[in-house]
Length: 627
Ligand code: GTP
Ligand code: SPV
Ligand code: MN
Image 1 (cartoon, rainbow, N blue to C red):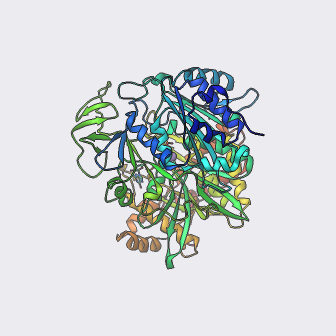
Image 2: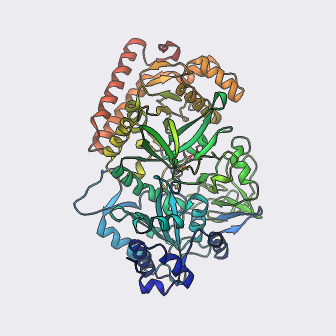
Image 3: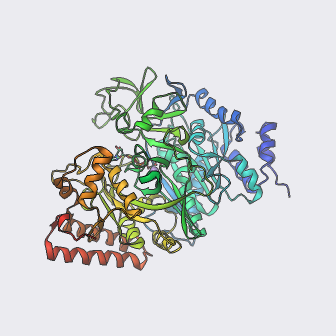
């Protein structure tokens, strides 16, 4: 039966838009868009298809409305978010829980009806006099088991423009699926704007996830992580979908690591926000498939992986010509790039750690800025926000992996977990098996809060699998799904733990920025059975000779025995203390933690205690047995 578009919506569409929408023949979709139009009351509803003219129209509108301004290099634009809208806002992001259901205490939540009343009240009339863009996009490659169709209704053409760069166009995908399209929906309004066209009512910022209808509402915010529906908003819904369907959606990069004889091995890695995904996926000489969200499916006993996205919304701080040549290249040549929250002077962008002196004044996230300017608390305002970002499409990168859009995904050979752990875990180690890795590196992931979320930086916390903010099912079930996933595979990917943020006794990082390349190359060799290891209570660590060879080969550096001892000494008491924190987190916050979590933690504790009794607190890696 032909689905019907409500008259109230029809009245706001032009004939072409009406025809494009009608062709999608999906009643739930029509009802969602009609609801958004009735609630937010835009003057016009604009339907975008995958046609080039529509995609281009979004970019033009962002400039016309002043949500973005052109920069000197053709294709580059700047967008600003408000001073209090510079990262994901955990406090006002909530799951709407229907009566009779529960979620883990660790998750921010509100009763569904109460939350809906509140956020729909805030969205009421929010788009008056504006155009509402309706965007159809896909998560995962098109025409694939990974594909998830998504629709976003937004009055921000910056958000709509970001969708162009970060996701695959999905109008044709909706058409292909017709009334069978099980889609995710986002309704977003920037709300009241000030003279700079930034959201003006911070105190009314809300991001609510109504998982029982696969709908997300977002209002009075513009920061990408709070507004671009397909990013972390959809990830929360995807985790529920994956739970129902028996696959995994992860906060992970995906990259091809190149080895002997031209072979390429795919690795994925989970790091909390601003802890290393993009930096690892962009290592020089390797190829990037994704830097933020990966999907895994067990297909005939093999783990196949795909990037949910097709672009990068990346942290620009510390991106410079020396450390990040591939990103630097796209950020400095003509092509489509949206910069956000950097400093702009004479239409040129500047950011922290760019490897040159920034301008002494200009426009930044607070408005007109000059060097030495202080905030209300007397602290100096930096030239650019630490969480300033750039948006580019992956295909613009020279190092983009050719399999990016392969509907089958790529075979995954290894995964890694890493956070900001100053004291305990060594820079790289391999788990004894799948379950040990999932628990001891994933479920035990400790990190410090970063600038990517609002609030205090540097506060230690457990961030389970780097994904805790987005787990919309009970945490225990989520861990169990990860453990069980390994059971569906003939040869599960090897699991590694990394720690780029270990500090020595003087508080200095034990490793340089480029050292991660060595760890990744070591993993590649382990996967192919070409490197040995030493056995520590926490996992299998590299042998000195292998690292020495790799440092020379990859970075041209002389790696010394002293370096190895500083980095890989097992700090037994620190590791025992870490285990206690992890265990108490799981006992207190994960009501349904699987028994395997405590078994793995207990076994690790026993191994650590045995080592303590045998060799003391600080054990040199040279004193550990080789395998
Ligand atoms: P999201 O996009 O927020 O999910 O973050 P991400 O995990 O992709 O983070 P990214 O790789 O962009 O790294 C973020 C920050 O970590 C940057 O400020 C980097 O400078 C810093 N960083 C990355 N690698 C290292 C490292 O090896 N050592 C140190 N000390 N800092 C690092
Ligand atoms: C993150 O915070 O993990 C990001 C940026 O990747 S965003 O989710 O878009 O805020
Ligand atoms: Mn992220």
